[in-house]
Image (tube, rainbow, N blue to C red):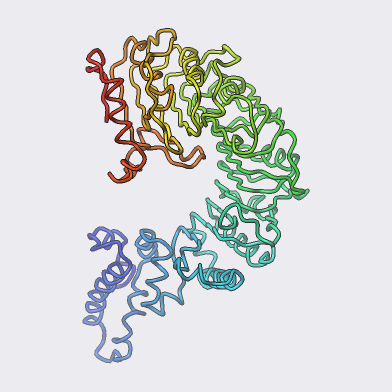
Length: 540
């Protein structure tokens, strides 16, 4: 029997005892011990005792080319590094894994990193990464057939340019499809004393980089060289805290003809001044998803005829989407409420979006940016069927006028079928005795499902619930939950929705009592629990 006779299916077809590194290693060793025994019986009597005892070397020699890669692809790099402790031969041959992901957690435990000086930790991280890659640098023909993802997420700067350059060259030589270089500091708001690493975009351009399909860059500087020819097959581009000029960004986007997804957060110019306007009149024909967060742009003006999903915030003064006739989902977050008084968030959404197209709308708002008796515009969301509002509540409004902005939004969505309103009251909400009555508004003729969480006794909340119960003529189900389910964070990826309920960790009974959730539940039963609503209303 020889190694060529052993197929990948012979081994992977067996049930692995566990995904833990030790169990997998023992499984492999046991399997090849059996193969060694068979080979030993067929070998000549003169075979040396030394060869018989060299089991670890023999096991690796017996592994078919695809078997080791298939087995190890089930593990993380951290788990594989633990396995290499068991075999000197494995360390010599290098890590055969399609996804090379290097993060702080790959090499360090949390207690170690907290007590280690930053410079020493950086040096140790670089050494560990180089130790993993060094055996692979000399065998590029092997790695090109297996490397799918190359990721480095660690706080490094321009001081370590030579090392980072070598890693990027390795990833492109290995024809990695997904490359991530996220050098953001921890915590994210901390500004380290070193300069940003300048990404050598020439190494990511040209025929040698035709395999790169996604590029994720964080806390780096981008400067397009004159010889830059674009990243031919790039489909997804993510930029976090990246310094780049408007002109270079425009040229970069136009040079990526197949770009489908663009995610830009906290964009800065190299001189740390605010960017002006990003205007691209040429068609970004393949672009389907666009996210623009915390970008100090006066305006973005894009021609994206196939755009389907758009996420933005109130950092930009104006948004122009030309020819985006397929836009069906939009997400808006109001961030600057903590920095300055801004215009009404609802008006921002109504003015900047092609409202006639949007079918699903997500809003991340705060109470103070939404207080207005009505919106300035009367533009309708004539195709909107799903609306999700995450509302941070701080302070105590003197009247219910803040509710009218939401009532107006519901009335401007004549075909709305599903509504989610998730509230997060910050601080103690006092219950004042008052006469409870629904706010006034027009009938909601298509609304069938409503889900409210974080229900409280804040002036206007119960009145809004009564308005919906009384005016939704075809309402089938309304759930009112006093438990706060939306997170404290304000980013759009933290938006709560019913479909994400499995990610929610409910508060303990003690916390529910401390934050008044039990009192709010009784308040809901007192004012909403009427006989006329008993068939459609559920109070959790």
